[in-house]
Length: 244
Picture: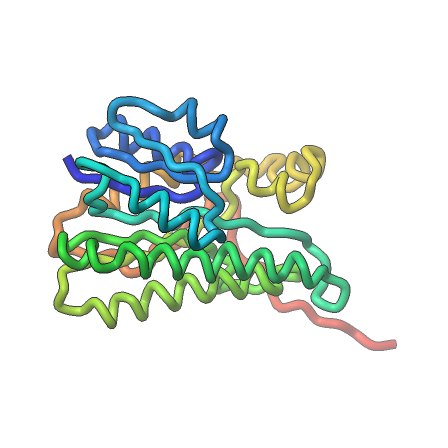
């Protein structure tokens, strides 16, 4: 059985992915900060590691502690990430910006670097969770969207660097998915309900099924980027400010 390591596994897309891969017979290493939620995911084929993805020492110690089939990672799913605030750049919190960069960019790069030698040796795969925000700007997106644009470009450049190794790299770029993610960003169930009301948004399970599909394609086939939206979401026109 192959082994997948999934970051940000305590809720939303990460949790759904743990369940989807485990149900399909994979060994799963599920990581996250909330040990109590990870405990509920444990099974014979799911091993959990509790650490903050931004803590280099804790991350390395946890990964180095893996044994048996869980130590041989065939697929890395970089799912951990967050968005904080919807304020325009001129009134946004610098602390929020730094937290998003540290989590969505720096930590993703660091765990990828840590696992790359093994992934190359096993001709494995990397799936990075980006967002449609990487492509389509919107008011309040500022640094969050910038981090997801980084993830998309990092994925493409990994493909270039890993050319000839057999390692596959994919950037998954979802639109509206109803999860705890929006609660973290807005801090309000009411705001989340208003955002998704009547949209029939995608679910965590939708994205988890997509991740599993990408992961189980024939090894000669690479999905470079994959953009997904609910049918009820599309694009808006340009914003135009009129003076006077």
